[in-house]
Amino acid sequence: MTRDRDCPFCRRIEHGEFEYEDDYNVAFQPLNPVTPGHFLVVSRGHVSNTFESPLAAGRALEFAGYLANQMDLGAANFITSAGVDATQTVFHLHVHVVPRKPGDGLALPWTGQVTR
Image (cartoon, rainbow, N blue to C red; front, side, top):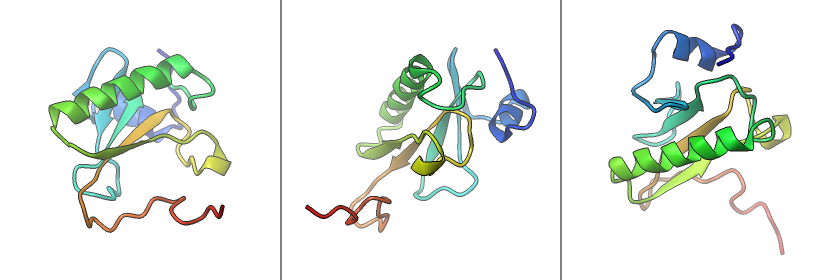
């Protein structure tokens, strides 16, 4: 499995700084969670995004769904970005699992931006 010494997610994986894992991914809380229970599923190997490895992205989403079910979240956003123009800031494949509740006040970036 490849790692990138300059990647903050690779360093967390190398130091065992995660709460959950499977054969392909790890999961941990982000530095700035947007709702209670927000976590990231991150591929174990350094893959920059979904374009680089759709298979790794599928495995990450599968693990994210498994964990969300185990946590009995009920409602959540599953978000991944690919590229600067898509707001990706850490260039290591990851899926945000953002638990949602009525009235949580979190507006998604694209809410109200499209006119028809």
